[in-house]
Image 1 (cartoon, protein in one colour):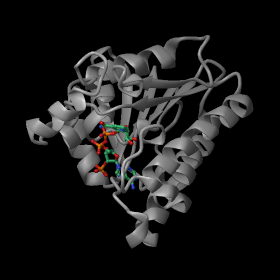
Image 2 (cartoon, rainbow, N blue to C red):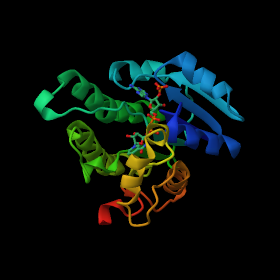
Image 3 (spheres, rainbow, N blue to C red):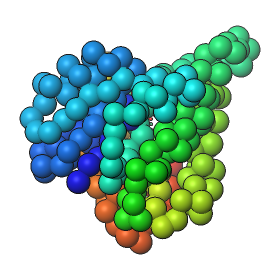
Image 4 (cartoon, rainbow, N blue to C red):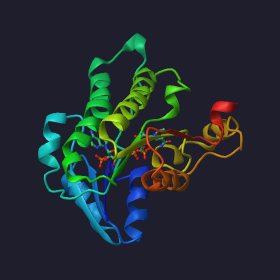
Amino acid sequence: MTTVIIGGTSGIGLEVVKRRAARGEDVVLTGRDTTRAQQVASSLEGSVRGLGVDLSDPHGIAVALTGIDAVDHLVIAAVERDNNVVRHYDIDRAVRLVTLKLVGYTEVVHTLLPRMHDESSIVLFGGLAKDHPYPGSVTVASVNGGVVGMVHALALELAPIRINAIHPGIIGDSPFWSDKPDVILEGYRSRTATGRLPSMEDITGAVDFLLSNRGATGIQLGIDNGWLLT
Ligand SMILES: NC(=O)c1ccc[n+]([C@@H]2O[C@H](COP(=O)([O-])OP(=O)(O)OC[C@H]3O[C@@H](n4cnc5c(N)ncnc54)[C@H](OP(=O)(O)O)[C@@H]3O)[C@@H](O)[C@H]2O)c1
């Protein structure tokens, strides 16, 4: 069983890598830089290989992924953070994120598709900024909404290969959030229904479910502890 995790050098992607490698799967993780990806891979237990691929350069993706043979499961979690208010709109940053998430994600699927089989499955990452935006999130909210359309269209085009999306809320123990002052995290916790922020383990459990459940395709799974309900 081979699982490829694009954006697997840190955060949620890295947790997925660890979980699947611990089960004895062959795992390929990627980040932008080959050396860093290889270093992360060699620091882990199990059969883990690291590759470099930059999703903001979609023309380079096919060449960068030539070292991958058969693919049973594909998880695409890559992101570059963007805070871009429209009154001071930074076109280059916006184009970079749109390219990475929408064109880059799709080109990874296009490239690896011939190496998949009918029982293969794919999980993409969006995010709940699409429903719960904040000032500065115009590009983030847009690309997360774009992931919805992408998954719906690809679920039809790729069948019987399955494809689903996870839209996390604020994942309290992920590297991006875990160092934030507790007063900020407490503000977010208090806006969930459960008083808890979801964890990376909650997300990796959702990845397992969507990759393995043969009835699941075209799903947009929000994991947010009821954030959107409050
Ligand atoms: N954490 C949250 O609370 C949260 C909330 C909502 C949505 N999400 C979504 O969940 C996913 C994972 O988030 P995370 O917080 O775990 O991310 P993260 O820790 O920031 O990790 C991002 C990953 O993407 C890779 N990456 C960055 N730029 C790239 C590029 N241009 N091309 C290819 N790979 C690139 C990074 O690798 P290198 O740095 O090694 O290049 C790293 O492996 C993302 O899609 C994010 O939008 C997360």
